[in-house]
Structure formats: structure tokens, C-alpha cells
Length: 224
Image (cartoon, rainbow, N blue to C red; front, top):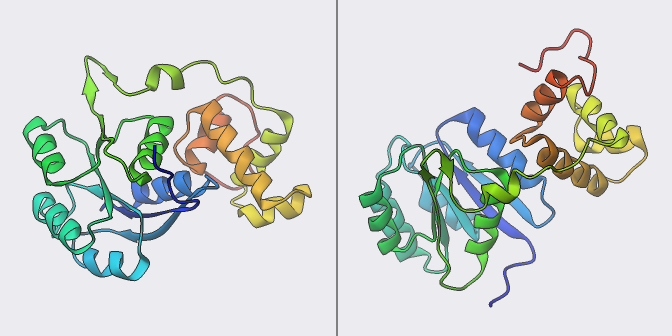
């Protein structure tokens, strides 16, 4: 099995700002992943890839100014080592087959779990022939959700402190300074929190923590 890069550089392309931002937060919480660029349309994708040199592109097929077949073909002709993972809200089997034939290394429905997404990105970054396809089937998402849905354990007191800081809209650096820990430790706590709460973003984690009464709502601030 070929090794993947020590730090996997990612370009996230999706026209939904909130989803794209949440996706970037989720990926950047991992020590070995970094979102180096974001795109809200198909316009300028080649230039962004050329400028930022990502290993993996997460490509929404429903973006404006964008044709998925032409985009995949054009990017891989220009950057043969690039790994493209398709993101979609639809289960279009003919399109899945065609895009994989063109060279995409994965096809993910946007309902996949955090664990499945991270696994797909890491698998794509390896220079081998593994392809990941995760689409809804009979009411569940194939490809590892069963393992992800197992009990992850209670949120620890320290993780609640981190969540409280996140609810106050503090950055990782600010959280580290307040709690007397490193930013790397903050990231590790956030990863654990995301796993335990099955959250896809900081806001999602806070809202779920508030709903479960794990933390108190910050005064004068709404996270919804």
C-alpha cells in the first residue's frame, strides 16, 4: 500500500457557503488534513488547483458554472496526480459510473458520516487504485456508518470546557490560551467532541451540546 502525504492538502468546492464552511472546519480539525482553498462555483477551478496544489479536490456536482464531466476530465488532463472526490445530494448511478471512468477516486453522498468522509479523503490521497463510493441504500449510507454509530462515550469535563469556549465564538488559539493547553490539544478535543456528538461543524457541536444540556447557553448569543 502506498503512503499518503504527511499533510493532505484539500480544495473544497461547493456553492453552499454554510456546508462548505462546515466541511472546511471538519477537515481542518484533523492534524493531517488542511483545506488550502475553497470554491463556490466551477469558474476558476483550474487556476485554484494550479495556485494551491491540493492533493485532493472535493467537488460538488451541482455547482453553478460547472459541468462535472468536463471539470473532472479537464482537471485530470492538466493535473494527472490530482485526486477528485465527487460530492452530491443525488444517487445518479449512470453519472457515478461515468465520473469514475473519467478518473474520479470517490463518489460521496452528502449524508455520509464524518468518519466515512475522513476515510475517503485519506484513501484518495494514497497513490493506489482504491475507489470509494458512498451513496444511500435502503435507508442507510454504506461504507462504515455502522462502526461510526457505535457508542463513543460521554463528553469529558475538559471537552465541555472546550465546547463552552466554542459557544463563545472563540478561536482555537483563544481556547488554548484560556485553558492553558496547546492548539494541537484543542484540535484533538474537537475531534473527540465531533465523534461523540456526531457533529459536522463547531456550530453543530454546540447546538447538540446545548440540546443535551452538556453546556449552558452563552449569554446574549445564539448559535442557531
